[in-house]
Amino acid sequence: MDLIRILIAILLPPLGVFLQVGFAGAFWLNILLTLLGYIPGIIHAVWIIAKR
Image (cartoon, rainbow, N blue to C red):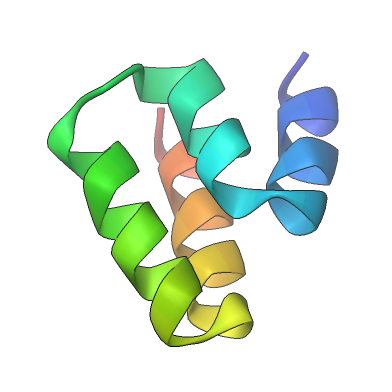
């Protein structure tokens, strides 16, 4: 299941984080990072998914 979440996180980083943590602070941080730059959003999303 984590592999699917990581693939989703590469395509749509906030969705991957949402599937992992819901509407927690990490989700909102990921939206901000994705808006500032797509690559930081991907890195953060993969890190959140791998951490849990």
